[in-house]
Structure formats: structure tokens, C-alpha cells
Image (cartoon, rainbow over all chains, first blue to last red; front, top):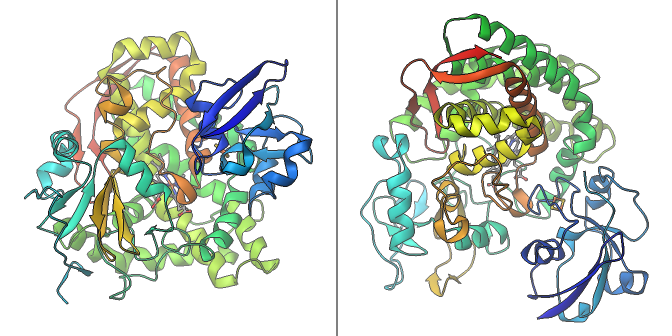
Length: 107
Length: 407
Ligand code: HEM
Ligand code: FES
């Protein structure tokens, strides 16, 4: 299991344990973390799973997926260099302790 | 090597239950719930000798198979034919029936044209059209809901959104039904569909060429990707056609089934009326409860395992999306229709990299119809018997007389 820490826009922190091979969006939903909607269920069609990867973790997380850039344009909140669609971040042991900041809203 | 329905026959692993059933029999296609319940009860995978396929009907495994495009490929066809061994009836879809990296390229072009932002501008027009159609239906003592609303609405808004100059309601609706029937075995539904192809396919092909599309539509966005060199001109034409094969009959079915759910559950309609912002969650529940696309297949591209059961390379697996959406293990009380259930993770649009690329548009259409309905119609009542239509991949109503009582 890999630990992921979600920080909401008002500063609330939730730490969850997620299975490797799963993705960050599913880890949030499975643990009732507010702030991820995931209308399309992870098919990279909705941008309601938008998140900001903590600056310290961007290298470890890696680059955006092919096509992710386009879909991020549909995000409700500001898109920053650290913006990702959480359904496209695959959980793996190197990401243990990963910090994910959630936007104010998804719709 | 023995072939059946264009794929290899095989002996299933001994621990997979064998079930002598025909999922494509007319009575099953019309009323599939008992088949799904038994499919789930018999095991995570079941071997069906009649077509020499495995079938998956539980949520967990169906989702896993659909999400794993490297082991369970689409490029060998999402129907019973295995493209590795025979020519498909039409050139394979360059989005639905391909794997990465080919898929990534075409998917990107389509996803961009159909993103929430790209289609947001259609909302007003969808709403106006829904108002116009529903207003006329309220005036009538009763009407045929499939023809007069479920078909009328998408046929009014969708070809226009694509930018089509030509429109032919019958061919537009039948094209989808035809393509979906073709995914099944060589039964009468597939044969009837194939018989329509010589009339419908040339018309569709002609209507999707660049010069038959207006500048501002979704189709033009796809041709723009050809101008940018992302896809070829021929590929762009194929992608525009896939709007029509996958985007008309499916939303017709979605609207028909939504009306059926609401007419059958007046208490739930009351909730929607009290809060029209439930229109979107209501559609998600309609999708879960009725699954317009009931089954798509995958092919194992390597020797592998599902739920500890051995699956050999070349095995066709029927993934009963509709059954996964009714799995009590996942949903608790799946047989109950609740407009505010919010069934995140339902399988009606598939899952993973092939998950429906038109889902935002489908949602926008249904949001318009259900919002206007909630705002203007007091009660939705049956005015006769609803009749389902058998199709090898779609579960749709054929006819449904309804009455709208004005608010
Ligand atoms: C209620 C309406 C709809 C339903 C239930 C539905 C269902 C589905 C499903 C289950 C898939 C997955 C296929 C697979 O994984 O093998 C899919 C894919 C697809 N859908 Fe839809 N669909 C709907 C509306 C639309 C619309 C409106 C369009 C076009 C604008 C569309 C275009 C497509 C395309 C092109 C694919 C292939 C995507 C890919 O393989 O990457 N669909 N749809
Ligand atoms: S869940 Fe829809 S884009 Fe990530």
C-alpha cells in the first residue's frame, strides 16, 4: 500500500492508503475524500478529477498523459503547471507520501 | 483450428462453469434481467458453448477486464468476430476497434472535439429544442414517445451539432442499430442489419464528407485535425462517421429509457420535479439501471487469468455491462431506481481508455430533456404498453405510448 495525502482548498488534510496500480482519483473516491467528482469514471473525458500535485512531488509523478493537456482546458478552476487529472496518476511505491492539493471546485 | 462466429473455439479451463444458454436469443434480449442474475450467480466467468465464448457479469471482473486494454484488446473486435482471423464486415473503427498507440492518436482528436468545454456552447440550443418538442407533446392526449421524443430530439440537435447539411431520420437512427446488431452472432438480428447496409452506409458516407459539413460544427473540428496533419483526410472522414454510428441510436435509447424509468417510478419523478438540478444525476441512474449498450466483447491477447481462472490467448469474453450495473455486490439495492443515487463508477459508458468519448454530449442532451420535462410536465404516464426491441448490443424500447400532464 502507498500513502497519499489529500489537502483540500481550505486546508483539511486526509491521508489514505491506496493499492499500487490503482490511480489517485479512485483512491480519493474509495476513501470519501471530498473535492474529486470524476464524472467520467477515469476515461479522461471530464476534468472533474482535477488536482494540483505538490511542488515537491512533480518530478516523481512525471509528465501529463497524451491528451491530458487538452482535457485540462475543461477544468473548472485555474490550471497551473502542477495541474493533473488525478485519474491519470498511477499509484506506485515511489509515490509513498505523495501530497495532492484539491481545487476549490470541480464543476 | 475450429472457428465459430469468426473466432477460435476453445476448451475452457475446468474450473470455469459451463452454461448452456444463448445470450442472443430473442427472449433474453428483450428481458435480460434473469439472464444477468444467473450469469452473476454462476461465477465471475462462465463458458457459453453455443458461441464458444466466456461471459463476465459481475461488476468487479467486468470492470477489470474493460480497464485493462493491454491484456484484453479491442483491436480483435468488440463483437464476436476475431479480426485476427477474418475480414470484418466493414473496415474496423479506427477508434473503437484499435489499441494504443493507434488509439491514442484518434482518441485525442475526438476527445478534444467532445470535451466539456468544446460542447458547452450547444447547451442553449439543446434546451430550446427540448422546450419546443415537449411543449407540443403536452398539447396531445397521448403520443408515441420513442418516435416523437426519444428519436425526434437527437435527430433535431445532433446532426446539426456535427454540422451536417443532410439529415434523414430513419437512416440516422437505423445506422446505429445496424452497427450494434453486427456485433452479435449470425442470428436474424444481425442478418436483418446487414441487409440494410447497402442502403444506409453509402448515404452516411456521403453525408459525412468535408463538403457536406458546415464550418462551425464538430465534424469540422475533426477535419481541422486532418489539416494539421494529426490524422489523414480518410481517417477524419471515418471519425466523423463514428459520431453517427455511436451517437444517435445510443442517445435515442437513453432518452426512451429515461422516460420509461420516470413513468414507472412516479415518486422518483416527483423528486426530479422538486429539484430540477437532479437532471444530471437522474441520467446517471437511468444509465446504470437500463444500460443502453448491454454488452461489448474483448479478446484476450495473451494467456492470462481473471479472478484466478485461466483464460487462454484468443478467448472472446462477452462483458455484460448491464449486468455489472445491476450487481448487488456493488450497488446494494440495484433493482431500485433512485434519481439521487449518484452511481459513480457505473459501466454504461464503459471504462478505461475506450470509455465513451461522446459521454459529455449525451449528458448535455439528457440534461436538456430532463430539465425541461421537470419544469413543464406535472406527470409522466403510460398510455399503453412499453415494448422492448431485441438488438445484439443495445437494449432499447421499440414503442412506448405516453401522456404528459402539464404543470
Ligand atoms: C447514452 C448514450 C451513449 C452510451 C450508453 C454510449 C456507450 C458507449 C460505450 C459503452 C462505449 C465503450 C465501448 C468499448 O469500450 O468498447 C462507448 C464508446 C464510444 N462512444 Fe459512446 N455512448 C453513448 C453516446 C455517444 C455519443 C453521443 C457519441 C458521439 C458523439 C459516442 C461516441 C462513442 C465513440 C466514438 C466511442 C469509441 C471510443 C473509444 O473507443 O475510444 N457515444 N460508448
Ligand atoms: S475522472 Fe474524468 S477526467 Fe479523470
